[in-house]
Amino acid sequence: MLPKIFSIGSFYLPTYGVLVALGFLLALAVTTRLAKRSGMNVEAVTNLAVYCALAGLIGAKLLMIIFDWNDPQIKIFSLATLQAAGVFQGGLILAIITAFLYVRKQKLPWLQTADVFAPGLALGHAIGRLGCFAAGCCWGTECTRPWAVTFTNPDAAALTGVPLNKPLHPAQLYEVFALLALFAFLYWRIGKPHPPGRVLGLYLVISSVARFAIEFTRNHEQALPFGLPFSITQWIAIALALFGVVILVRSASGSAKVSTPAAA
Image (cartoon, rainbow, N blue to C red; front, side, top):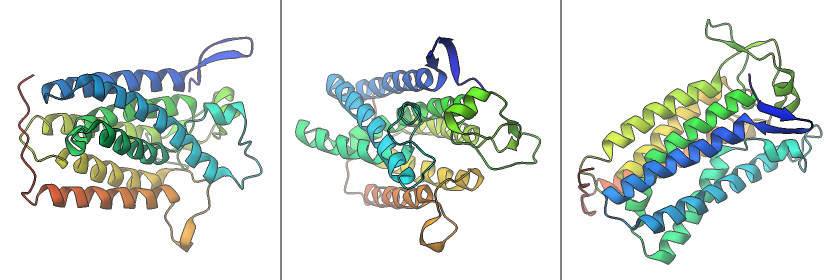
């Protein structure tokens, strides 16, 4: 596809990096808008978004390094690794830990805070997945469907290892469409009366179920653990979905105060 927007000598502007930055800015705009509509401290929410973004980048890279540690063909400490997308769940987990610590320190309502982040997180992730598609990373398995995609750009193969001239499942685009639909649903849902944590729980369950299903069309460079036909990221998706179910059950218990957002 188009892994480089332009090149000057050995320097190039990666499409993935630009789209990730765009995704963060749009996610931040959505989150601050929802925070303001909910009567929350917009400055504190903005600071939290920045901290979570940094934690997300670090966590995604760390989990990718853990996955690839024993692969002799992967250069862990290299520019290619630095430019790689990483594993989203690793970023999400570290971002959740960071958010919990920050929210606790600032004495913010953590479930309500997480709710206003959920729609923007889905939108930002969708745009980031477009970057993955442009770069060629996170490619799919071979596909004979009419919508199969074929990578032909040598730069994509050099940067990510994606096989060229083979029809593949557009696994990245599957996730883009799923996440955009999820964003639209969550943005609509948060505007309705809801107990704190409801939107977060819906995000965790729906996004995890979608990721679990899409993983069956993804190429897996890691060995499947536990002798079962699931990837490590699918096991993480199962754990996150269960966590989301717990939040939904607790939010449905009636013990939490229902939030009614103010009109935009």
